[in-house]
Image 1 (cartoon, helix red, strand yellow):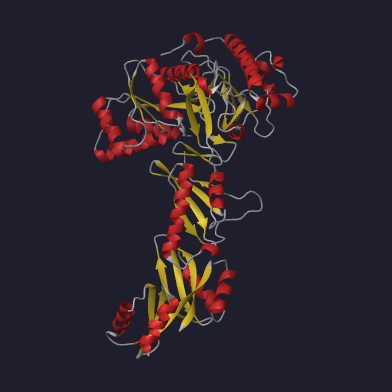
Image 2 (cartoon, rainbow over the protein chains, first blue to last red):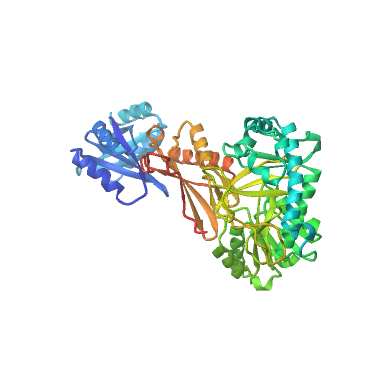
Length: 131
Length: 432
């Protein structure tokens, strides 16, 4: 499944992450997953949220630089080797991944967020894998 | 040592007579040779005959840096290129440098004023002078070089940088004089410490420092760390380069070589002359230069003139250390930096907007320039490497214009303060 991920530019300074989460919380937006890509002086906060468009709006209103990016959501069995199997398949089929992160909603399933280089191609490979 | 006693110890009347004669000649030359000067004089209803003595200098129009830029590269030269034997250039406000040309006589005059300056500083024929100013388009290196040769001392033309080698040569060649920027002098002392070189073991006795503003406290620090006498030398390429003025051993203001460069102090707002001894903007007219004579050049440096006779015996007027500017120019590691240069770079890049802040700090002994640029949404990328590439591109573009390294930091939008009036573009944290 393709979803919209929200990316926020953050300077490395204290309190900025809590500010983002507070703004989203006050707007009634739930965060399902997030990750931070950091460098020595800035970071990119990537979020999977209940309402990406609204999240962008409220963050922009608070002067954050925000962007939405399409990412793929894939399910993987929450057990040893589950992710390895999926990644091996993707690799064998030639999908290239820019970045990924994961969260698990329950004991059986983990959800993987994938930002591939080629969205449609990766989606097709994942469908093949699931099917 | 007083190199040219006749001039350096002339009475005020004698000096005024020399200045009057030379000023009159210079005004005639520029009026007849440089259309832009002629136009400016005509606009004021002036003809060369109106300038009868040095007293009349205040009638003349001013020259500013942009006049040189507008006539880039050679429009202000009064002689054909066949007579120009050397070009130098300094950084300009929009990336175009300010170009100056010297005739053979100009180079001789320049060597003479630098030689006088070295004499003021206490340098003798038997000294070994390590010139650690940059050689090249910058006037510092070659200016000191030819003055030292003219004096008859030994010059080590090592140029800037290469700090360990500088110290090595000080040991091996037994340099007695170092010429560089004051901040580099402090850096040299740090590196000496790291290398375990005791300044007492060196033969250094005099430092000739210029090309950037420095305070009395910095002087004391350099003198105690390097065990030398630290002398302030002043100059700018538009006038000639280093040697326009220099301190003597009494270190109480820089003697202006006023038989070649007439100094004035004006109020930068009203442009009127200030009362004697008051602080204002320093203005220079060159009265012997052939290649590019310049009348009433506004240096933007703030200082005052002291006419009392100096204990050294020289009667040449003294100017105090320049401690401020009447424009927003920064001097970083001897390089002139205008915020507008940074702005034009950012404007020329499609990815950026000119929301920036320059922060200058002195870390240890070296000036560092940090540039904060806001990450606007249109160029915010979700991918780290794209942001890093952007940062690299900004860094590269700024460095190639300014000629000094810059540390670019990407910041969140609207974090740089907006003001209704003139935006604050510079924070200078240096304590100098």
